[in-house]
Image 1 (cartoon, rainbow over the protein chains, first blue to last red):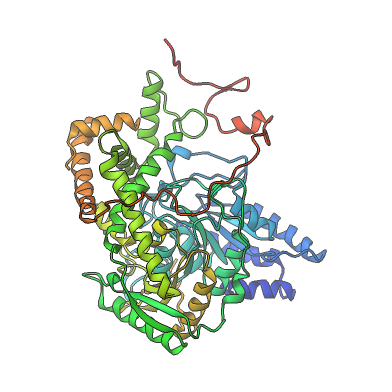
Image 2 (cartoon, each protein chain N blue to C red; image 1 turned 30 degrees about the horizontal axis):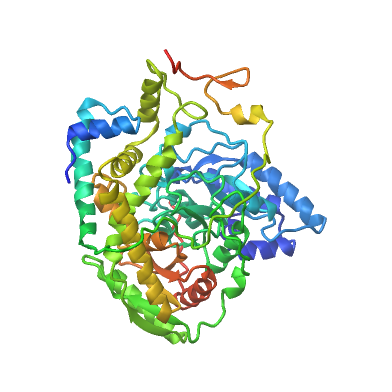
Length: 490
Length: 95
């Protein structure tokens, strides 16, 4: 049944509609693939019984003529999304055993449209990491390996489980989240497509919070069209999230394949950074050529505050995290480690429950918000954030979208950067700007490096203009002819 | 700005995280190096710039202040570490 797991989401939906196979058959094939791929550590919870039950219910709906837009499609769900009755831990010990009694809005939207849940996907703890190594469940292993090497590589992070599962054909698509690049960098490292929509497109309700002004959910999929289909179902206004935008959801899949003739695409000169591999530079130039051939006008633009985005992010995100993660006190849910008194219980619970990187970020956040440092760090960062957003505003007066690399390298070996926090943070150098400005950004695979590892290009759009990204992404996808899938070794 | 071990101890206390004494020095080095890297923000002229507190330009929506949910203690308490007759049990707060 392995051919069923190799289908794109679109092809699988067409096959289900044509009754070439049932949702139960499609789901069974995926359940078997998931079981056979435990070496990747992509799933932290497998829900095969639930998946098959949902698949049979889906087949019944289809038989009654009530098929939804995702009817019968087996998906993986990042462990950051609360799923009713199914363990949801944000890959943290402090949420060990937590089974929500409610469903996140994004996953509820997927089930409303007929999708099937295969299980929960591994990730960096509380989405804090770029290599999946901060997970309490241990890292995900990238299904891709360098040619002629057996060394384990990172799938990126924080949505490493989502990206690895999609690349290894352990689901037709997956939910993910992106606070500084957590959808796009793993997508680039695994040869998959990931889009972080405009801030406010997808509801944050029921998604474990990391940094609320930056967090945004989005899909990871194997094609641009599949990502468009998934985003259309995930998005939508939700009164339970006050920052959810009360706007119509465009028909995203209809933008894929649309002509991009006449679109103006900016190339920001500040994204040429020291030490960037020549292959990434070359791929970027190829991307420019492909878009030119498709009829786009290429414009050199300047985003002068780009280099300050990452340091500003490492004040704002930890500050918001230190506040959001204050809720994990061992009183109402999750881990409790009993101490001599109330304060001692709090301190022991949090020391035991949080991992090293999460504690590091809580400490930074607490420090920059503490008396005497608030203005110098936090307020300063919020002003720099405004400067970064203004840079984009000005650029978008002249252009319709931006083209950049997604990450400054291909997938690196597990353990390579885990001793140096700042080196790890630099992974997000090209992605973090869009979170700060609230803009949509998409990563799509465009080629491979000399050792055969996938490389991604990023498209950045105006607020609420995911449509242009799907059109431009479709054009690049067609020109790049990236068909690579990892060689199965697991 | 470098952070010494005493500051780490104070911040850890504020964050309610018990850090072991032998972790304070390594942490002060790690946090200092991160903050040294962040210092480059001082190169940016932010005179007269309004701080950006939200990525969305729309105003926060208002709704009627009415009860829309509740009356389900079993669901609320389902994940509590310790429960006695529909109450969370916590360590003694007042001596």
